[in-house]
Image 1 (tube, rainbow, N blue to C red):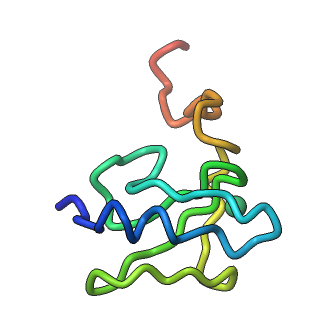
Image 2: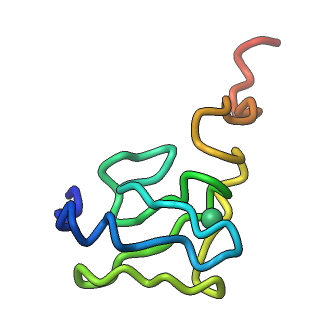
Amino acid sequence: MAITLDAQLLEILACPSPDHAPLRPGTPDDADAEALTCTECGRVYPVRDGIPVLLLDEAVLSGAGAPGTPGEPDDSHADSA
Ligand SMILES: [Zn+2]
């Protein structure tokens, strides 16, 4: 279920880390996830009951770095052997 955050609200929200970058809905892996991803540091913030939790303690680093950079190869695929 995609989150339906107000476009205006999304404009006001910013990453709590020093980059203070804008956030975008979803995660790098799932654009429909109930989360907000920082466009700068790639931290993923949960959205609980429609309320974005913009706390560094709650943020999850996506590991793939900033959105737009290719994710790390998924080594769970063993079909190349
Ligand atoms: Zn950030």
